[in-house]
Image 1: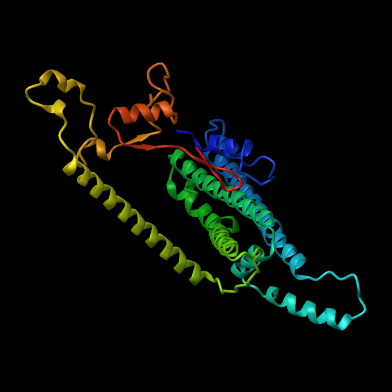
Image 2: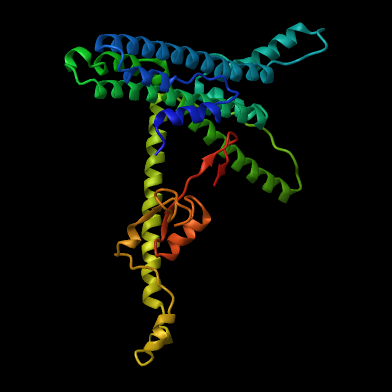
Amino acid sequence: MVKYGGHVEAVRQADNKGTELYLVPYNHIKAIIFDEKDSAESCQTKFTAAWKEALQQAQTDFTQNVQEKVWQFLFEHLLQQQHPQHDDHDDDDNDNVLEEQQLTPIRGVHPGPALQLLVETSHPRVVQELLTKMTQIHRAAGINSEGLRKLVKKYDKHQPQDPTIYCLSAQLLPLLYTSTVYCGQSMLQDGIAFLRGLLSSQQQQQQEEDELASANGFSGTALSPFMVRHDSETRHQQATEMKLEEWDWLKRLVHSLLEESTSTQEHEAPSPLHDNNNKSSASLVPAQPPPTDSLLSHLVAHRGFHHIKDRNDKRPLENSLSAYELAWTAGIQLCECDIALTQDEHLVL
């Protein structure tokens, strides 16, 4: 298991490289807890000061990046798309009327409709760029808030003194849970989910329109602006409906697999190799899938059938095709694998 400090540093050197997003110095603050040279009072003072400084930097960085890289970026592109560019200024009155009509949808627009306007009026590259920025900021905020929480927990666990004096959870966690870096994650997460939904709907609609246009011998599609109010109550309702749909889909999938397995076992013809008069040929029968009520049918091979110490001379390396093949050969039907999400929203195994 990778320790959290190692995870933070791995993200800093890989996914966070080039973004200039702030990540808490987890290992540096953690070292203060285990410094045996300091007294309990000195350790608490140093830890609290370093922790509060990290929280302040995380808040400042989060607020600045959400403001500049998300919303200023979004509205600048909306203005570029909505504001008309004219070379001829002979008719200023007509220009003003046209600007008034085109700028009206932007005025006082809610976050959801603003994202919708961007998807409908901008190039997909611009929308993908915004989605990537939002995902990076959300990931950094999650790492920072979770790292700060873990540091407080680790300090209180390591200090055996009177908890009424040295317990910092009651002092520092309220600061974390009311900070922008913590509270702002839900807003950013809703925006990411909403933007992904808009992109998926747009791609599906574009595909259907292209197929219809191709059948009718017509090329080209027209934008149809669609304005909806996307407040917190609507987002909560949509999230709840999405979760219910996922649960229903999972139930249907499990029931269909069980029915398919039962039907296969009932209609499977007996093999001639199972003849009781021919016992010598029984060893040639390949291993059958375990019954649905057996233990193997409920086991999941974590990253395949590998050695817990990564001894490749004993078993294959974890998360490799050989490890999965060995698990399936051993009769384990379910395997868990590691996947990664690229910055342009693609899954990589």
